[in-house]
Amino acid sequence: MSVLPRNVPSSIDLPAVRWLRSSYSTGANNCVETTVPRSGPWAGLLAVRDSKDPAGPALFFSPGSWTDFTAALTT
Image (cartoon, rainbow, N blue to C red):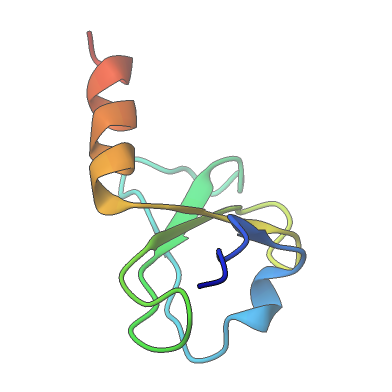
């Protein structure tokens, strides 16, 4: 079984996804955007990208890893 890469060099390689950003985000475009691909090899993983560079790389996290990460930010 092959292991999927934990990133893609360009988030435009994820067609048909809707990128979301926090409602706390300002119009300055200085935040991250997330999506969960529903099909393809990364289905079910959380993709994260920099809103300033929408054609830039996207990183992938398991839902549990992302939950642990965000919980650690608030402690």
